[in-house]
Amino acid sequence: MAKKKLKVRASGKKGYAVVKAILFHPMETGLRKSKETGEVIPAHYIQEVSVKHKDAEVIKVNMGIAVSKNPYLSVEIDGAVKGDQISIGWLDNLGESASTDVTVS
Amino acid sequence: MNNQRRSFLRKSMAGSLVAVSVASGLLTPSHVLAAWPKAAFDSKSVKDAMMGLLGTEAFEETNQIQLRTPDIAENGSVVPVTVKTKITGVESISIFALENARPLAISADMSANARPVLATRIKLGKTSKVVAVVRANGKLFGATKTIKVTLGGCGG
Image (cartoon, rainbow over all chains, first blue to last red; front, side, top):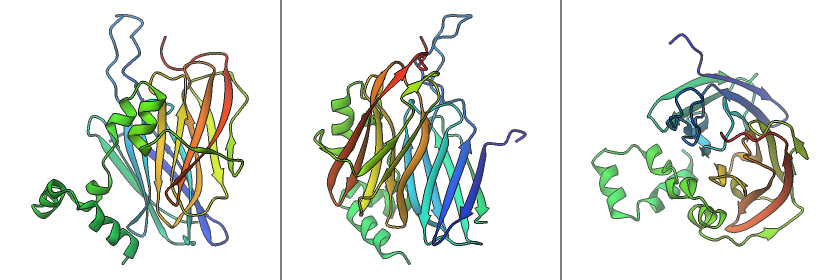
């Protein structure tokens, strides 16, 4: 587990928190061909991202292949205040997953 | 305990198959919520994608949705898109890129505690209209914007 798979920051505002995340992922569409071999590069992309505040799922994001490489995601959660725990996890089409917890600062 | 989530779970158990799987512990509750809408994401036409995801392709064009994107994207593989709305009771926000091989880019289901804001970056194969569709109180609202792409981002 050398490579970091996601980077999340949650900053508290008045009555809500802004959660910004970068998920490190190739987001391969399955439509691209390799320049060297001419073979189709198999699809490999994130399908689901879940944003939880204190263990309750607040936002569930479904992604398709049209989301850019290393997806960036920004959402806002009402009622999340400084010190609360936010967790973000993703799951891709090959069953790989990663998640992390951050504290609202 | 989040009551809304409870009632949602109960409703989603209407399908007996799902209920059985839950009862037998095959699926955790989060998986019941988490059915990735494969048909919609695999659709090659905008109509199919919208039908698959939202059940209809008709939405009301509104200026209550702020769709913030660049007018010209130099690099189609990274196009920042922000959707923000003043509409209350938002249940989901979806983004479609009409000219893409798979038009449905992203769809976010929002619970009551989520503010109706979604920012991300998408790929555009070529110059395309981008539509943000917001579902609120069972109704669909949309905003459209054309983004000019000078270098495509979906293979080629």
